[in-house]
Image 1 (cartoon, rainbow, N blue to C red):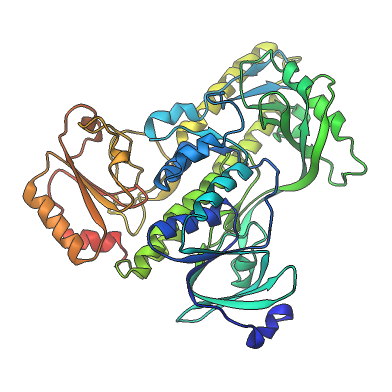
Image 2: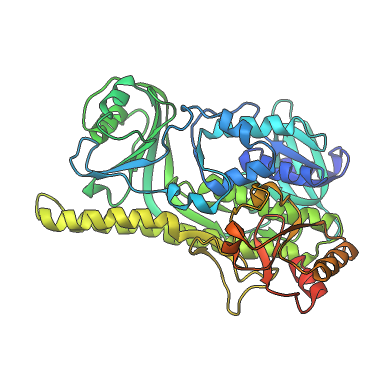
Length: 539
């Protein structure tokens, strides 16, 4: 160790922690809440004192809202919405600027709404962070170190150690914990400290981000149905978006687009670029202008011994499709219950190893197939089709593109059929590609069907292992409950019949794990109940 961390022998230590979380953004806070609700103490180390006001991470998928429901704050999240309640979340795509006669409104996340308990939502990330922060303030087993910067991490067979410095007065400190999770962004100190490498696609393309206010832009876009986002696609832009997003309705906007590599805030005319993309002149006032590099990077693994990474520390990408914060919060949900299981004694090392095993291929495919491939595909489209050269060919291809864009939402269905802690099919794989179904499928997310009481299954299932028994045999249920109790597994049972909505599960018994993925299903008892449970908890 060098520099600040080289003084480790002189650094005062505070009490040991169960989990140290480096990074207090939405992923770090979500993980702390997931752990805290399971009785696991943690501390969050975050160098920022205040909240940034850049409206990134706005597109929250249905699955993400399910997390907030399980954390008991979904109503608070919806109440934090900046746009009016029920204002449409969809988007418009145009050929050329936003005044083009060629445009479409593809079906997006609404295409899969029946397969999730909660509807999707849209609000700036800083509003989401406020909701998470307020929840954390009510939880006594979460400690905050705001204004502290992590300089290094280390580990041995017994524990992990974090070295940090106070940004204001230079005080040095070290903390010990059973495990450390780096949720500290794309330039993760945690990831770099443990030597995890990243790979992916670097487009060698600089992008600009502007946050601005303009009532005239709002008025000028009333030609379209009400939507939240607008993509202007120019043939010369090689598939890169000129993207407008609403912050509110009437005035607030953000915009990102490709710019020259040598562009700076001093030499570039941002207003001209925005007006070119809009297709008309309008007054606007800038609140922020900055740059970012267009690249997809995925860590080779999400774990090294007692140290894990999650969110942007594990996978970073351009804001195309809203995959970033949603995948980060899924990381938190996946890892949280597994860490709790290990610390509480009923989960094994294989359960911890399953976090990287499950989550790594999901984002690797997300980055390659849903982001990089889309950019390349759209670049080729605009090279090949031009309404001024062959209108009929363009119109035919434009319609096919609209349909293809709509299919992307239904094709994105992360699942863990190949997980070592799932009783999955032979040759199963963990993949971002799938098909949404109400039918119960091993390794897939449970569908939100109604019980005979009229309540949704998600209102009864809780956050532990759950057996859904539909016209189940009392003796089988009793055996499974007793074995789960003997193994120390938090366990509950939902008993109902197979009539009405439940028929769509097409299963009599469904074993669901704490993050609501299906471990096993069957028409009769598992052949080896204890063996099944041992597999599910990594022992």
